[in-house]
Structure formats: C-alpha cells, structure tokens
Image (tube, rainbow, N blue to C red; front, side, top):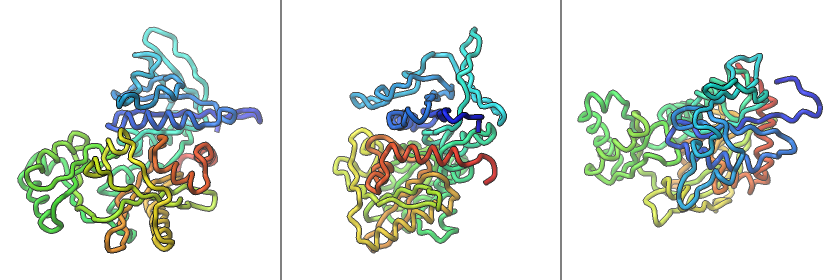
Amino acid sequence: MSSQTSSHKPRVAVVFGGRSSEHAISVLTAGAVLRAIDRDKYDVLPIGITTDGRWALTADDPERMAIADRRLPSVAELAESAEGGVVLPVDPTNREVVYAEPGSVPKALGEVDVVFPVLHGPYGEDGTLQGLLELSGVPYVGSGVLASAVGQDKDYMKRVFTSFGLPVGPYEVIRPREWDYDPAAARKKIVDFAAEHGWPLFVKPARAGSSIGITKVDGLGGLDEAIEEARRHDPKILVEALLRGREIECGVLEFADGPRASVPAEIPPVSAHDFYDFDAKYIDSAAGIVPAPLSAEETATVQELAVAAFEAASCEGLVRADFFLQDNGEFVINEINTLPGFTPISMYPRMWQESGVSYPELIDRLLQAALERSTGLR
C-alpha cells in the first residue's frame, strides 16, 4: 500500500477493453462499474486497453460505454489521444502511473492503490494482467495468476474439476498441432466422439467467453466451418456433447469467513436463438430468472457445487459458476468465470442483488477485499 493519511481516498484504476474478442463486453462492464463506484469513497482512474494492446487514458464517461443502435463500444473511441500511452511501472516500490505522448514530456498521473480489472478473455482475464500486477506489487480485484489461467482454459478447468470429483459433461479437445498437421485425424476424433455421445455437438474456443466463436453443429456438414470459426478466436478448441436440461448459474463472493454462494439464476430457452449465444446475451438482452425456480434441495446442491468449484480452482474475490441441471435431476458444471460481466443485464450482480448485496455494495466489497489482500504468495 502507498502511504495514506486518514483523509486519503484509495485510488482505483479501472482497467478495461483489451486485445481479446470480448473487448466490447469489457467496455460495457467498465461503464457499469464506473457508474457504480462510490466517488465519495474512491478516486477513479479509467484506463482502456485498445485491441492492439495500447494502454490509453480514457474519458470517465460511462454513458459512452454502452450499446447504441446495436453498435458495440470500443476503447479507441474513448481514448483521449490516438497515440498517448499509460505506463504502470513494474516496481513494487513505485505505484505512480505515467502518461506519455510522442514528443511530449511524460506526465505523472499519481499513485494507484488498487486495480479493478474488468477485462474478459485472453490478455486480461487469463492470468497475464494478474502476473503484471503481482510484479508491480499493486493489489487487484479477483483471482490470482493460477486461478485466472485455469478459469480461462476450459480444458484444464474441466481437468481440475474432475480431479476434485466435480461433475463435468463429456468433451474432447483439439489442440493446434492436431488440426494444423493432420486435420483428417482431428476430424475423425470428433466424429468418434459424436458416435459415442450423439449429435448435435458444440464447437467452441477453449479460451474465450461471452459465447463468442461457439457453433452448434448438427452433423458432419457443418463441422469444418464450426472448427474454423472457433479457431478464429483460439487455435485450441473444445468439443462438447449436448446436455439436455436447464441452464443454471450461481454467483460466489468471498467474505472474511470464506466464499459464499448467491441465490441461483436460470437462463431460459431463447426462442430466437439456437442457444444462449452472444446476441442473446448482449444485443437482444435475454432475461434470466432470478432466483431460479428450484427446490430447496436443488438450490442447496448448486450453491454447494459453486463454492466447491471456487475452492477447487483456488479462486479469490468472485466467480460465476455455470451449470446444467440435467433431465435426470443431476447437476453438471459447465464452467466458471473468474471475471464475470458487470453490465446492467449481467447475471452475477443480479444474483447478488437478490441475495441482499446491492450493486454498489458489491463493487465496494470487492475493492475493500483487494485492498486488504497482499500481492505475492498467499
């Protein structure tokens, strides 16, 4: 921590945007977070990362970080300069953020006490930014390097869950070299998987989110196209069997005495979409049901599984855990999200709102927990 007086307000750097295909979703989340942070309690420094990786000083203007006429926002539109860059020193003894433009003297922007990363996907949610912040000695909201990496890679996430005895659905992984050097063998691997588990299958990037790059494949005819679509976002792809049942989500939040689960939510079938895809989530604003219409026993089971998944991956701060309640009454965990969306329609804050934790209180609790937690081994 930097030296503080009793009147000092902690300075929060909200870092958003990023290089992944979820860039726009991160901007939406940042707008909601900036709108909710208590400005009487915190000073705020918005820092956007462009799609090419430049750290930009951006306007503190949540109204511009929203979908307008089905058009998604970007950091490039919010940046105060097309060339200027923000630099966070990789030095635990110095937390002063600097802003520089070509041909100009660098300008000190002051020290940062805590970072709220609202980046989704690779180069932000996957442990890379967390590693930078660990090197810098700057506290941050959310999970550390290991849990962030595990939470991003659905292959290893499922392996971790399986090792802890948590129920996962059938899946297959196609690694980059398999498709690059012997696509026929890779295709046969998927066809054999379909022969065992049936069509349709879901083909998705192994390390992406927000339902980007996912295709529901009904047969051999659409398989190659689905693989190429997933590989546009990640050279490593995941193939999953269709699980028939209800989609259930549950939030986990870390308290002083350990992680607790929220009331669960249900994602109902969306008639205009084949599954809960990107457009259903963010463009057409499909509404989840909070709390989910579950029995007391089902609610307790999914809450227990959500906390178990949080602990299995060594998560910190927050997680949204996604499940299928199968037609046979059994829960299967689909995935966790270590930095879930905080947009106004996002399920994580809605679930906690129903659990008695308001949106501003949720933001405050996450920031306070990060300020109290040291960086480094813990």
